[in-house]
Image 1 (cartoon, rainbow over the protein chains, first blue to last red):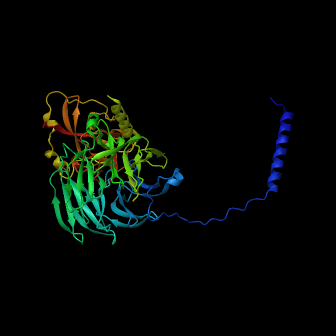
Image 2 (cartoon, chains in turn blue, yellow):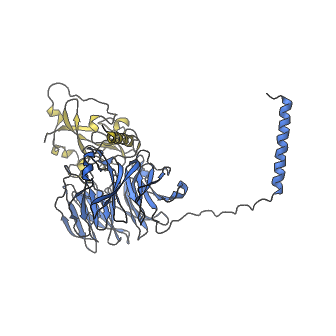
Image 3 (cartoon, rainbow over the protein chains, first blue to last red):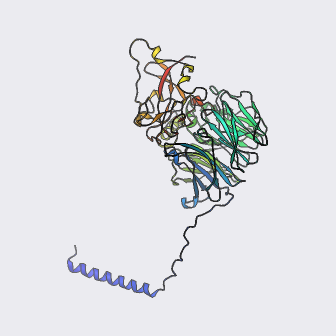
Length: 397
Length: 172
């Protein structure tokens, strides 16, 4: 232990050293001061989003009035670089992007006192460059589809001039919106049938409880020309299908609970249902592989589609996600790759372009994981955006 | 139980307990809406089906394993100030629901369970339970829990889910 005189001596030496340091600093010229910065600058985004960007829809299951979409650049390696911006989607809405109009459409619901009060349903129109709500269309009250996010609850048609908005109140219908005029063209009843799948240039199909499609053909003014019900092609009790298809060209591929896929030609005015084929190679069927999750399908620009798969499927496992993503060549009706996920997956999306990347929601900790969709290599985890429940992912178009 | 069973069970439990999802709504759907539709269901009312003795059931209504929750996907009202068949104070029970058929191990019967949501306050946040047995996609609204079933209520805000016995299920 030091005595008092020793302590004072050490303090004197330290003070001397500090004084010398200050003298040296004074001899060195200071750099110029920081320039005065303008106040009020707000960032903007490119009109066309790069292929490495994704839209990450956090439905905020624990606080639904505060849903949010992240615009995310997965090519970057830090959160500061990955997050390009956000926009809100209130009360588990759905979104649809129109790259040709550089807009993103979102169904939202608000109440005048937050969790209570008068309800208003709107279609909010966000512009891609500013992520600002540039317009809104007030929807018929109390009936827009509200549930776990669906890719097929909003459909662009008529060369992106119209948007079909799925309703469920629980009566099923579709509200047709003119995106040029920002106004409603009309409501179309789809009794017993929900959601909006493509049907030619100016129509849509809905999926029915009795295992059929209801295809609606529209005239140039948006009025109904015809509604046609196809033959039943599945049994919703005994052989259910997922309502979440992948799209390759003019074909939609609907996975079934049992592990098959049903191809549907959506290029015509009426859905044309093809012959199912099995997603699981015969030698592996004893392992009970089947699709599962929320965003369970995706597609790339190489003509392939993706399905989130889990083994040992049981009654009730169809929403739980999967351990692997299987990739298919639909022309050859064969699996061309399988990617074993590092963590369990709940939803997936695939980026556009010649070098597709696969983004997967990990439901264990709600991080996002990126894979090279050609090699299957794991690339990175994106854990810390502040996301709560990113239930639906979209590759930027 | 093989490796995949364990993985799936573990992931499912983690998903149910920590993550985000629940297929939002419950109900009978467009063709089975409201109390007036109950007689159309394939059930025999429990009150008329009982014989001698007292009805029995077992289990913890705050546990996801509770027999009535076989097809549920949501926050258990029992953990939110309500119970398996009542809503928490100040909420409103949706008259429109979806149904499941669950086996009561205590008496060996199958029962039709109505999963009425309680609405008007934000997500309860406790006891998230996802079992999904018999659940179907939204094209079968009477069997889907993926919709927000706070329909026909003064508020659209989902809070939690009940599991109410509405009758003994008929055998096929």
